[in-house]
Image (cartoon, rainbow over all chains, first blue to last red; front, top):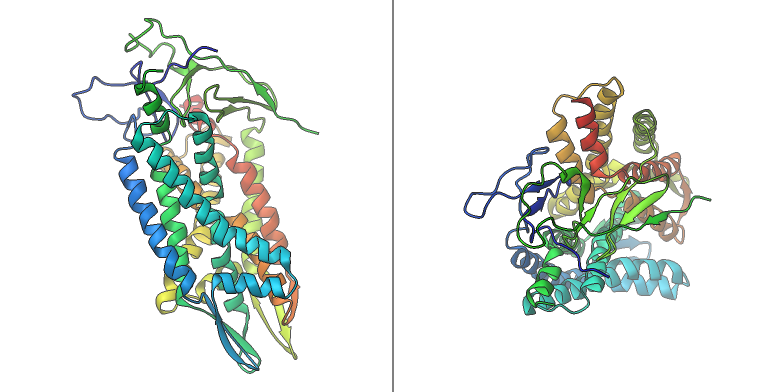
Length: 210
Length: 226
């Protein structure tokens, strides 16, 4: 199979908003705007790896209080109790709803952890200038892009439960601080994924002179 | 049964072999650049149900759209009506000893708007209510003008907003969250799913179909009219 020609090598630039392919102005001139949609044209997102690392670190740090602090406080006839994300998963598991437990575990634990590991791996390999498994790493990036927002699931569940369960005598549910941190994790990791430019994976491969 | 057919693409062969291309303005529209890996392909005309994937990294770089402006407009009007229904009827009603409460999409977000919980509430309101509404409104505006062969005022800026807001619009997550909440609450109290949840499910399907239309379609809609 022939090797691909890459836009950056033949002086082409593609608009990331509308996909228009244009000729790049010679290097010293400042970046120009897209002819069709006026987005500023960049061959690569500027300082993509730094931005991704910053947002990813923010996500990892916020994930600690998100798991330690309770996300919801439920009070009923027999007093009240706060529940953390993992505590909620466990109580579903014990109650026999293993399917809901698995769903919440996937959205709140597996998805964020996968995003941390995947983006971490991508940043590390790009930093090292690796040309290893470029195609698979690009697929991994697309996976991170797709699964990203499903972590919002637990925030939705807490909000709806709190909105509905408000019988003063019989039971109420209130959101707790943990959910604020968890929401922060989702937003930070989504911005991290959006700031990562997957073309960096391939730039390194090209520099290695394969 | 519809089946996606993958069309083989070929890489573009540079005229000079290496270095910058002399002048691409003549054939720029015949090139497809993969947004994930920057590989340059020769564009092909796709038939019904055909998609073209990048040869280097496998990302779908072009897909055939079989929907006309009229059909897209019809879907958008349907989405607008479903949005109205999903937000005016309760998603679910719960009952305990004669008392009952119900919640709609925006109530869920609004009720959390106290103190520190305002932060996630704002994110929810934006991703589950404001952005889907904005997207439907923008599509209606652009398509209604295109229907009569006109370019909508503010076309350019609005399409950019439409494109940028897409990753943050999350109706499908809200739908799954509502279903989980129903199951969760049903272990304590009596829960009845409302009309809102059916409307939300249908809305999610329509918004997914509308988001499958690739950006190129919207921008060439402009070119055809201009």
